[in-house]
Amino acid sequence: MGNSANKYRAKLGRTVCAVALVATLAGCANVSKIKTGSIPTGNKPISEMNSSELSRFEGKYASAYKANPKDKAVGINYATLLRMTGRDDQALAVMQQVAIHHPTDRDVLASYGKAQASAGQLEAALGTIQRAQTPDQPDWKLLSAEGAILDQLGKSNEARRFYRKALDMVPGEPSVLSNLGMSYLLSGDLPTAENYLKQAVGKPGADSRVRQNLALVVGLQGRFEEAEQIAKAELSREQAKANVAYLRSMMAQQNAWAKLKDKKS
Image 1 (tube, helix red, strand yellow):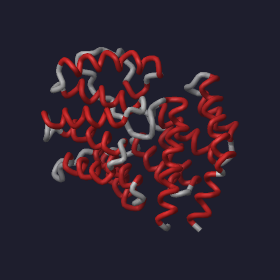
Image 2 (cartoon, rainbow, N blue to C red):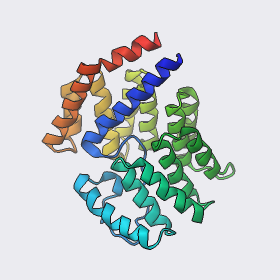
Image 3 (cartoon, rainbow, N blue to C red):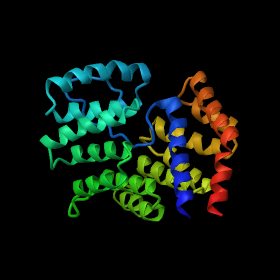
């Protein structure tokens, strides 16, 4: 695939993320259920909060971070909230400060790498994630994160090797299966993407983001009613309809997938 096709795929990938954002505000990144520091959030992880909940907790975390920018958990969660609300540059600035105080902490480096990737600093993000990894005690979440960055760099085959290494450590892990499915989506192989996402949805621990990724892949194949049914399983009727309507609009206005296939051929 040529450079112009890689650029188009990256653009399409960002559009794919935007579709998911309509319903979940979670983006395409795999946000871990990290500890919430001194701010209780109940039983709901940050990655599954709706827009009003995100706004409420963002203010609390902003105050907590200002009071103590060295607090690892507060800094990571605050940066996660900022990324989920589209403030990628600010999230990166927060994680830069946290990393100064915790330069060898794997959780901090992983979140720093995600912030770099969200801000478009993909090569730097890859280096940060690799620095967080330890070959003698590899972390499957970092393997999956490295795969996600490689996918964004257009290195799909290499990315999938990392996903499969992660799956060797945690067989059937839904977040990794979901990332693997989205990897095939970005390379235009929608049936394979759907297969992995269906596997992911059927595993214990699959969250809303995994189900919305499946709805997205089904919708991209033109099966909008089926996609809406999948989305409705966890979203309100209005959210599900908005998600599918956005997808229909994107495909109608840009004919995006046909363009991608043309570029590949």
